Length: 205
Ligand code: TYD
Image (cartoon, rainbow, N blue to C red):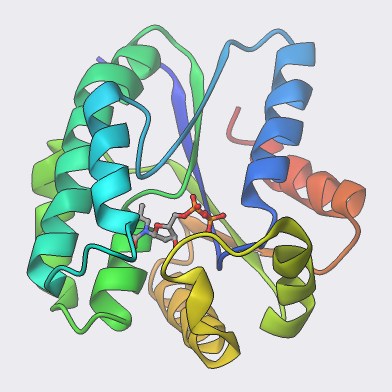
């Protein structure tokens, strides 16, 4: 039985999810909560191997194959890491989760959204985030951060128009699930973004 709280962070590449996950974790730990930070694709030995395969620009695969690699990684991650941590009462903060599949393989990749939603539920055996923080912002502003960090995987090489589509896609998902997906203004300075996140998370933890 689940006792913890499951929070996911979503947003375009370079939106500061990883930094904010760490800052939120620190805030929660200072208040005595047990926290697990993890990320997708990844989080287990198998999922890290699948991550390498799914994100390798030299290994082009079809969209169904790509979707299934991410879903297989998610299934292993939930089974071995996320669900056990929630059962122990941890706050689990996951950098990307099922919504990333809906965006990257669904809205951008052309895979059917309802099918992907069902596959997400199959992969997680019904587990869904209690709360999803969507870090939103103008892709040009976010791109400056990304460029400072270096370009690494195949999505990040596709440029601004692609990032605009990602943003629109996320806003569309947020519109459909207003209770779960909360918008965070990601262009603000790091500390202000954290403050907004904490305000929104406070009532859930
Ligand atoms: P990552 O290097 O973790 O970058 P960031 O989260 O900072 O963008 O890259 C993960 C990439 O994997 C990202 O481009 C989105 C992609 N992805 C999918 O295509 N589908 C998925 O289901 C997940 C979880 C990620």
